[in-house]
Image (cartoon, rainbow, N blue to C red; front, side):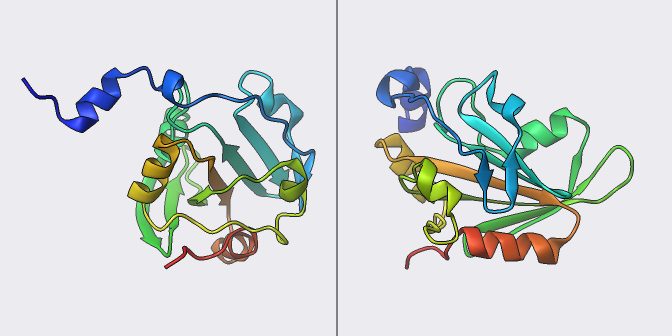
Length: 172
């Protein structure tokens, strides 16, 4: 009997294939300040805040205990996804909160080896966004460092400006 590749991969302990490294997150990325409590329970996830906007970074995608779809976290706390789309590796969704507000979330994946210093000066070292889910998944599976970037806030225009300064369009 032949298993499909995806089934075989899902049965393989992926943490043995892709090493998990401890990460040190900078206290600040441009205007975003690190919530120091955000890394206490899981060093692979860091939450930053700048006024009303949040930047949530995830590393070691595919490792046990780390989801890679923002729906997982946002739906778990009562949000629903009203609209969703994607362009040039930048995904967008309008959320509906339990209180009735409609914040925006933008997210993308980068394949890079950004260290703590480069994250602090992100606009100088902005990585390219992955062109597709297939690209970042494949690169991660073969060991590349993939970061999931989530920007959450009320003003789509402001979030797009931040996303454009923090990342470059996918390579063609």
